[in-house]
Structures are given as structure tokens and as C-alpha cells.
Image 1 (cartoon, rainbow, N blue to C red):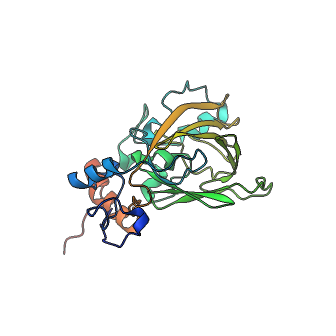
Image 2 (cartoon, one colour; image 1 turned 90 degrees about the horizontal axis):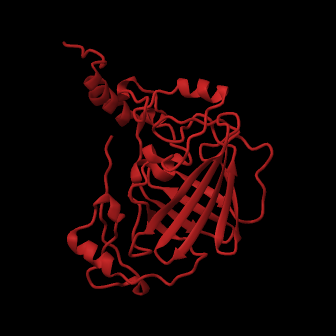
Image 3 (spheres, helix red, strand yellow; image 1 turned 45 degrees about the vertical axis):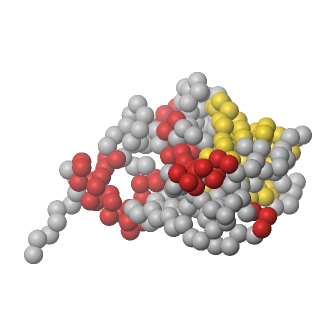
Amino acid sequence: MRCRFVSVPFAVVATLLLSSAASAQVYGPASQGQRSPNDRKIAAAAPKPAYDPHDLSGVWYGAGNYDMNLMNGMMWPNYTDNGKKIYQTHKPSAGADGVAPAFGNDPIGHCDPAGYPRDLYLNGRPFEFAQLPNKIWQIFEWDRSNREIWLDGRQIPEDADPRWYGYAVGHWDGDTLLVHSADYNENTWLDRSGHPHDEKMTVDEKFVHPDALTLVDTMTITDPTVYVAPLVRKPQEFKLQLPKGVTELREEYCVPSEEESFNENTRNRAAGTAKPVEVR
């Protein structure tokens, strides 16, 4: 699977000019190692944006928030009988029951959507918040997937079809954004350790923006048919990538044809399960 990032010169409006060096440059998040030493200096010297606790816009990166650690800080409750049955069908490549990828069945190994909340932590990739008057777009770097968080007072429809990224509604309680989501497609995993959920899962989050450069998310996952008690994750911190308004997510798609080639020529070959090559 190939991932490409291209740094493209463009004219930045006067209000975004940080220096002559920054005026013709776009940036990928610092986490991806896409900046030259000089670019990193420019980013470090960029002025902090004006602080507004209700302005969550920008590209956010959580150092060390990898999907294999999604449940770090949780006391894992027992599975229900149904939860055990679901988990036993999963063959992850990480965690206590990890197997070689060639023998696993992680959905993203076939370019299925990562889903939420997994995409929030997928291999430490960043995400972006884009705010509109009636909703917030949450855009994930991996596969450019996204979810809408509706802020217009609507409720989750009773007959909503399951979605890869759920159906999310939110509202402000003071300076805290409360988000409730449901109707998740049960074919996604919570993390690459294979922890499951079903369509009855709900996710409740508290987003707090305590200073200009910090975003904190506290998450509670409730799925009574899979787990005997809610899963409460310790608060996870994300940092705004500067310069704000200039940093962009790179394009990373899971392309089925490329993933199939990678599976056959790398994962399967390493495990000795590659199909024999026809010799003519």
C-alpha cells in the first residue's frame, strides 16, 4: 500500500503570513515527520491562536495514542457470554491473543473502514475538527474518513441504520462539548487487539479545550450485550498542530488492489501462505 504526501506551494493570505519562509509552505502534522528542520522551527515559532474554549477547529495529534492502546487505563470488565462468542471469532495481530497478520481477520486488512472510536487512535494518526454553525466535521487522516457531530438539537433517529462511524449528536455544557453517538456497524473493532462491540454500543464523550493548544477527550463505551459494565477510558490529550490554518492532513487511503498485493507479497509470504507463482 502506497502513501504519498506532496508539499505544494501556494499563496497564503496576508492574515496567515508567519514569515517569508512560511508564506509558501503547507505542513503535514509534525507527528508524521514531514517537516524539515527549518519548517519545524517555523512551526515552533508560530504564534498561538487566539484562545476560545468553543473553537475546536484545527488539526490535532495525540502522541502515543495508538489504537492498540485504546483501552489503556481501563479495568477490563468481564465479557458477557455473547461478548466472549464474538471475541473468539476475532483473530487480531496484537494483544494477548495476537496472531501473524496472514492468519488474522482484522477488517482493515481488507480496507474495511476502521470505524469509531478506532480511527481516533489508529496508529497515532491525527484528525481535524472543522466547525460549522450546526455541526462539527471530524475528519480522520486514515482513509479521509469522517463523522458528523450534529449540534442543532436533533436526536439520534430511532430507525437509523448502523453506520461505520455511528450517528453523533452533541451540545455545549459550559465549555465542555458533550457528544453522544450510537447506531454503530458491528463489523468494526474497537482496536487492533480485536475488542468487539455490537450494534447496541453507545459512545459518550466529553471534549474539553483547556488552553489554545490542548484538547482532552474522555470516553465512555457502553455495550451491555458485550461487556458487563461500561468501559471508561482515562482522558486522552491531543495537541493542536501549528501553524493553525496551514497544517493539513495528508492523503492516506487504503486501496483494495494495493492492500491485496501487499497481503500476498508481504504478509502471506512471511507466513508461508502466499499462493504459488505460476511459472511460464
